[in-house]
Image (cartoon, rainbow, N blue to C red; front, side, top):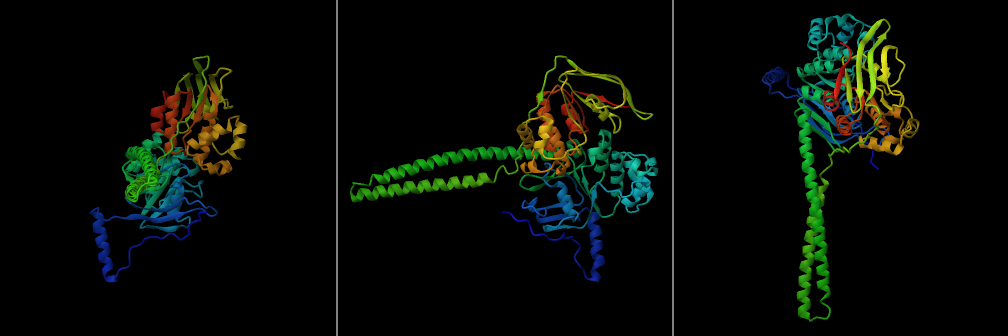
Length: 529
């Protein structure tokens, strides 16, 4: 049984000690090389091995790589592979074996605000470590935000506004390397575009994101947690994906070639061995001279058989080095139903108000079979309210919503906090086939060990996959998905995207992933404005 790695404290790298008379000269040289772009500051990870207390499975095992502190790194990998764990290791949150050396300090985002009732300017001053107010204003301007936000209580800002102002403040810290963990989950498309442009103007961060277009627009390297290792690749997400596809195709072709070689070598070795044995058997009853010649020939045949077997073993060993990082992307299935009516939903002059304030009004559209309608618009414009109304939730509104009485719906809500208990009971309560449900989860790279755990202990991405898998098990005329991809890894997004484009279910959905929208939506309806 594999034992947990020995735990050692984080090792921080600092410049070596110098004689006092040489210290000034050393820093002058460092400043010169930095100005010339020749000084390289690295984060070095050497032989990193880590597992959680009480666990016998290593999250990381003998991992080594280096990254430049001036890089803009996108961090990708399947849900549950250890992206957030690795960020916490950089922060020194856990003990581990191996070493992590860095000449910068790390700051994690999302950043926890202890007193959110304070004015935003005071919250940001603390986050920026008392950077002058003019610098805060400059960063907010670069982020496309108004000065007036500074003088509002922080808790009155929307989640998207909080994300953007805090990131702007954290970038003002000196000698700082930001660890940015999924900042886009509360941002609409406009907010994502502004944040993307802002990050493109910065350097020195690791960005965990599953939004392909977002990564393409602001990173210059990709840090990837694969099935068997961690790799660093120059370029954006598309560059990394193209390189990975080429490498996967090469390994698959090599694997097929070696499989063919192994089969041929095995047949040849068996054939030669049979001839050798048959020839050896003919020595019985022959003369001494004949027996010597026959024995010599049989020995040569056996030697040839051994040589073929050795070649076969080398081919098997070479084959064993392949396919370790091939990601499983098994095709998913969905079970859409055809309805007797061509138009299965009609919305006329719909308006939603919260108190005296209208969220939106005068909205009209129809949903026809085979359409995948995306509701777009800024945060807070009422997109989720429309999905909930179509799902039958009692939200105060005016206007008309018409659905056939026999229409079957499948609903994926934005919130996953209600998920508790085990998957077997959840499948029974949902009226879906447990075997199919778990098969879909496995296709989405859901670890089998999670099947026995409480859903409350799942990661945010795993809980979202539970709701998506339930929906894919349900037979429905209309699928209603409210931000279904939040926290879901990029490879699973691509699987779901391929499924929807192939099976053509009728859908109304809310999603801010630009690449997903471009491929999946047959129509977009802007809500608000």
